Length: 133
Image (cartoon, rainbow, N blue to C red; front, top):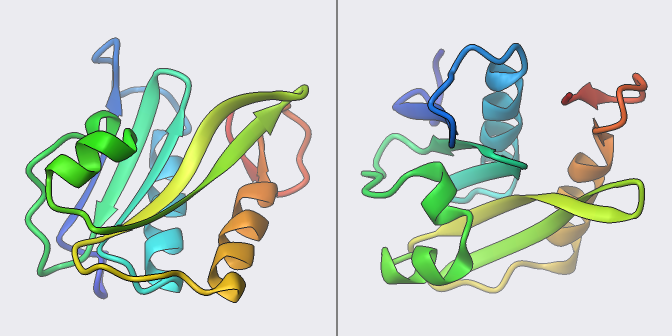
């Protein structure tokens, strides 16, 4: 992997099993979200799994599952954050988020871009975009 997010990308499962077939996909989605919004970290949390991608200059001191919690992210020094929910059958089942160490207000166009990326993630098993199952 090359580019600004080559430094750190991981997928974490609460069960400790990293062999789920979509683990790499969620990591790439997190990386894409952070890169598109020029953020320091991207996180995709779905159920018991979370993936994190961090920019080269960013040292990550918490796990993806920890940083998926906005309060924990604040405790770790992330001052800018935007999150959008992931839905399945009318229920919120996850989150796609980007975090920045610097305080910042995300513009409406950036938030819409993150929403559109989240909408591409198909949690139902039907192939409409990026498949997570």
